Each structure stands twice: as structure tokens, then as C-alpha cells.
Length: 230
Image (cartoon, rainbow, N blue to C red; front, side, top):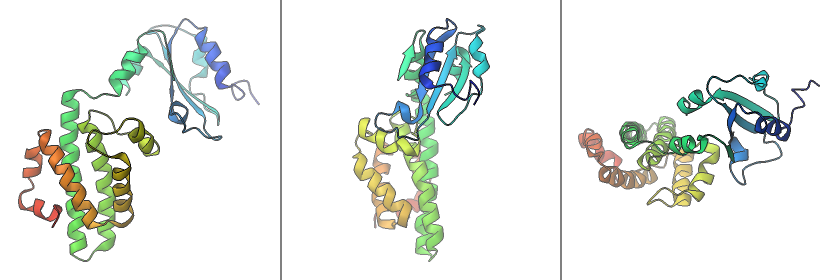
């Protein structure tokens, strides 16, 4: 076993904390979500270096084992890329990354609303036309767009599926019961239940219109009738 292969998370953090070129360490993945880590979880760590500095830690670029994955980037690269030890503004950058700007959120929500409506419409139409497999596949597609939309309406990026329940429990979407939403998503993904899809769409439509996205919905014209509760 080489020295790099045997490198532990604690040992690397000690090296990084003693290196003046390091301006921040950012832990990601299961270890950064309270209660999500298991015996199989590794440590995913971003090592953020001051711009234009040299460091011996560069020898760990690309380091990846079953217990420790390292991504070594400059501060400028980290700022551009989308448990913290912070010595140089990293926390502020992270705070900005978890909130979309108003313009970003509005554009993302409009795009995802249209994609959600498209997949929902196809699902309901395929169910009506006796194509159950196509209806379920389109329903599953709609769920991804729906989640992107709901988080964008709250100016947040959608979390990875693994952390969705964790995120909703700790940071609920305004106006939504997390367990009820997940129950509906589960039902739709598993069965393509048209009645559930329509009830959910009614809530989404009301929310989207309140947030100024009525034009996206109105562009669907009479097709909206097929998406709404009958």
C-alpha cells in the first residue's frame, strides 16, 4: 500500500490546516449531511487554495480511494464551480452557491415549469390513449422537472436524490409538506397515477402563477384542461 493509498481524512486535514496556501476546506457528500453517513461513506473534500500560490499539497491532485476523495482547486475555480473550515471567505461563497439570484431562479423556474407541463401532458394523454408504459415513463420524467421547479421557486438548487428527504426535513419548501410531497412523487414515479398528477399540478399551477409564471402556463392554451383535476 502506497503512502497516498493509506492517507486518512484526519491526516490530510492536519496537513492542510498547516499549509498557508490553503484558504478553505469544504466537505461534501454524505459526511456533510448530518445522519446520512454510513460505514461505507467516504470523505469528499474540496481543498481551496489561494490564487497563484504553490503548495506541496498539489501532489494529492486527483487523489481518490474508497475512504478519501480530494478535489484541489484555486479560489477562483471554486468560486466559478458551483462541515467547513474557513480562513478566507469560503463560507460567503458557499452561502451564495446555495441561493440562486432572483434572475437565475426566475429563468430556471420558467424553464422547468414548461418542461414539467410537457411531461405531465404527455403522461396524461398517453394514459387516456391506452399507452400505460409511455404514461408511466413520462410521469417519471415529470417528477424531475417538478423538483427542479419547486426548488427554483425557492431560489435553491435541487439537491441530489439521496439528500432530498434530508433537505426537505431540515429546510422545507415554503407552502409544502415535505412528507406529502415525497409521497406524491413516490406514487407518481411508481404508477403514473393520473389523479395524483392532476392534483399536484393544481397546486403547482397556483404557486407558479403567484410567482409570475402565468405566461408559461397560458401558452399551453386548452391543453391545460387535460392536466387539471377533472
